[in-house]
Length: 334
Image 1 (cartoon, one colour):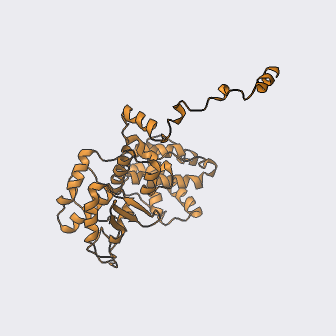
Image 2: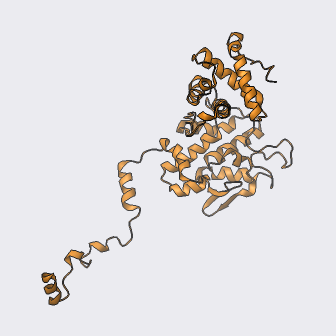
C-alpha cells in the first residue's frame, strides 16, 4: 500500500519532491508500530511534508520534519480553516510518528492543545431563545421530539451527548422538590432540572415506552439501527450550530453565575475534579461589588457571632487581672 500511495488532492509538483521521503518514513514507522488506519498517517505526513519543504523551507530530514514545535504550529495555524477534530487527528498522527522515528526528541512535556475557543462557550440569551423555538421548526414529529429532548435535557440538566442517548423514561422522576434526572454510566449521578424545563422533561419521559430511550422513543430498544448519542438528522436554521457541548456549557455557566456552590455543581455535572470547571470560568459574569462583599461577609457568619462584642466577653490575655497579691509580687520579682 505504501509504495502505491498517491495523495488525492495534492498537485503533482508538490508531491514529487517529498514522495520518496514520505514513503520511506512511513515504511520505517509501520515496521515498528502497527496501525490499522495507515492511509490516515500517510495523508497527514504527505500534506505536512509538502508544506514543510515547499513553504517553510525545511530540509527533508527527520530532525527538521518531525520537530514537535513545527508540527504544533502547522496544525494550529496552517490548518486553521480545518475543523477542530481534523486538526487534532492530524497532529496526533504526526506526533505519534515523531515519537517513534525521532525518539531522542520525544516529548518530555505535554503539548499545548489546539485552541477551540468556542467549544465550551455558552450560548447567548438571544441564541437560547432561538434554540428553545428550534424544535418546532422540524419537519416531522420524530424530529420535533428529538430536538425537544436535546433542548430540555441539554439546557435543563446539562447532560452529555452520550448520557442523553442512554436516558430512559424511568430515569426522570418528580417529587415535591422538583424533577430529578438519574444519569447512567461512568458518571452516574442525580441531576436537578432547571424549573423552566421541568414540565418538558417530564412530558418527554412520560410519553416514552418503558425500557426505550427517551431520545428515540419511536424505536424499539432492540432495533439494530439504534446507536447511542444523537445521530438524528435535524434541520438547523438558527444561523449557528447547536451542539451538546455548548448546551452543557450554557447550563454549567448559568449555575456558576447564579452562585451555585462549586462542589454541588461538580457533582451534578459529573466531574471528577474541580479543574474541569476551569474552562468555563471565562464566561462567568462577575458579581456586582455589593453582592460580592455581602456574600463573603454573611455567608459563613455564625448565629452567635455577636457574643464576643458583649460587655460580658472575657478580657484579652494581656488584660487578665492577677488572681492574688502573691501573683503580683512574683511577677515583679521575675
